[in-house]
Length: 248
Image 1 (cartoon, helix red, strand yellow):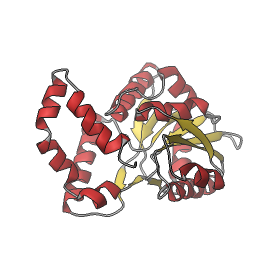
Image 2: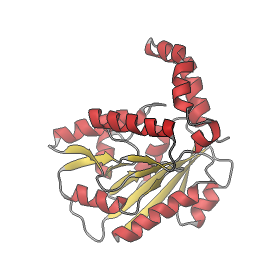
Image 3: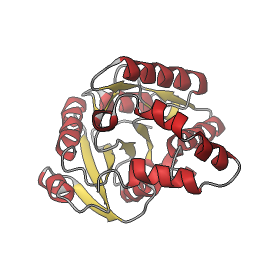
């Protein structure tokens, strides 16, 4: 794509009762906006919010949409398809981006070599279990090439591929795979940022312990096994507890 001063970027932020985190997320985007020198539209998609997320977002200049779906992919898609920008970036509300993120995204898209991509993830604090999580993510991303975290692409690419794959979990990897396949058709690559990264929130670890995901995997092996055989009921209950009902 051709990058000009008039090129608009939309950052889509899904949010479910995120009054504690929405301001810092928006401020990180505004810092990246100032650094890149482009106009950035912010859309906060309030999903079943009962707190002050919407009011705080509006007070900081974000456009607020309301959504009732219990599916994070559908929440993101509500923002993506309403976006006015030529380029769409998504980031979860409890996370932050580094100041060069948008500038690097525009540079990579401007080369014409890339369909879009993700970003490396770094925790906002570290412990031994979080270090192990970090290493596993780096290895997984390196092997598959399906970088997630912050998603970015031209809006027309999201539109042509139908946006995020609408499933309750692992929608990020499925979406990366879809964008990667679409890029291959156009002779473009799916990639990741080299110089910037997602600052990944540790709030669930702060609340539930740094061994959270290791513990969940081993204590829910039956649910994962049943899901692999087609019965997702127990797994869906677990996903609801971890994601869709976490901030009641």
